[in-house]
Length: 203
Image (cartoon, rainbow, N blue to C red; front, side, top):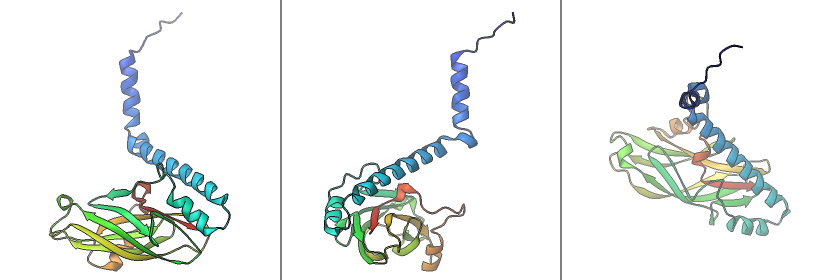
C-alpha cells in the first residue's frame, strides 16, 4: 500500500485563496458577475409584478412609487469622481412608466468629488439607457471648481416594451461629442449595473 501524504489544511486554504485572486478567477470578476445576476433577477421580479397590473398606467406608476428598490439600485450611485442621487422622472422618484418613444423630463443631483478631479479637467457626465446608448450630457464642471448641482435633462424611452435601466459614466472631455462616444469604454463595455440610478418601464 502506498504511503498517503496529508496536506495541511492551511496549505489547502492558501491554494484556494490564490485561485480566487488569479486573473482567471479573480474576486473582482466574481463580485461583478454576482451583482449582475442579482440585478437581473430583481429586475425580472419587478417586471413580473408590473405584468400582473395589465396596461393601467396609473396603477403601474403607483406600484413603482411604492416599490422597495433594494436589490436593483439605491437612491444614489457613484462612479469615479461623480455621485448622482435623487433622480426624478416626470416628477416621479427613480422610476416611471411611459409609452414607446415618449419624451421623459428628468432631474438629478450631481456631486463631483474635488479630491478625484484634476484642476485642468472638464468633467461631464453621460447619461443613457442600458442597451440603448447615451442620451444626455450633464455636469460640465471644471475640476478646479467641482461641487453640487441640480441638473435637468431629457430622455427618450425605447421603442420596444420592457424594463430599462438608466445608467451614467463620468468623463473628462472638452467636447460633448467626445463625452457621448465615451459611453462605451476601451474594452467595449457600457456602464455597469453599479451606476444604475433609475428605471424606465415601457408599456
